[in-house]
Image (cartoon, rainbow, N blue to C red; front, side, top):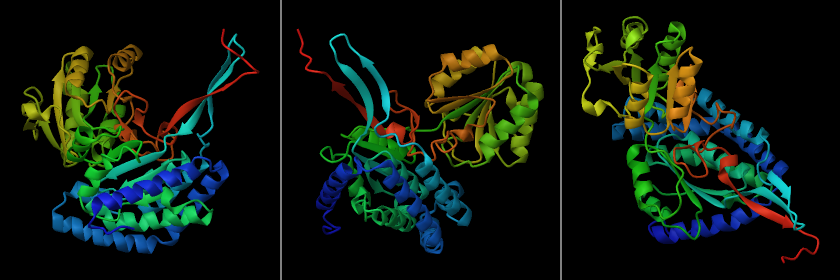
Length: 421
């Protein structure tokens, strides 16, 4: 490995190794990849004490850096969360292998038989901040989809990511796959990020996982294609036909289960007909749970709310804060969401099928939900085992990006001496 102070040389070498490893990984059998992931899961659990010890160093670093409680929660690893990492690795291992899947096939009058078949993208670059579990999720999904990956974890999760990465490498080498198939950038130097964004000869797509600052930087400066979402500005609209018990259960979970994740609800829209009933009950419950409710003029009549400013509409708090406003009807709710959302996840609470259809049809978020907590906006909850990120763009991958979304396709064309007239 090159001198860590020479970042361009370091990253070039990592890129070359990843490109070489991707060629081997692309032809690895489904069974070998599955065995590698299962061995990695075993290694994570066997080394859980080492991982927790490494995480303690990261937590100390985070405290010294002044990270918020929500960010510290994202950083924390304990036995329960390590068990979750192991479960995620095994879930990805158990999935059908996407590589080689025939997406479509047909015959032409010319005598050609054509198949469209899934194929790996090549080398994925993942840049992430404080959540060390991304190391395992990204490594697993890239391995499953036959891609090599270059992981650049945040400075906050440096030690935790290193400990988890060692387990992934153990899984790879145990079945004879190249260790370079999953590489972790071994420096906190931010120059490594800038270098990755320009590595068009080695990296096929970049996936940023983190806050608005990181994702905005990547989207602005990357010369490599990007799968990303900038913010999770998540809305819940309580329709006049909402079931009060469902509404309370869903909103409370969507806001308070974990406030620091991108699927956490950030804005509550309440139909005027249920402001004094369902709306008032939910807002009081949020306040009782310690959530700061920043309300419009109408909802400020509810004791304990605070006045919302214009900047509260379209804000990703990632904290125990939610914006709330009354709307005249579903059309007004949709207009508000269109104006202020980030095309991540939006939800309607209603028993009216026509209202739900209107909400689903007129909005273009990557994920739209009905009567379900927005905290389900997660690849694991979608049956993908894990996710490498959420994509809100409209090209190729959208929503939770799992193994299948990390593939492209190629056409396999066969004839029997066919020639074109």
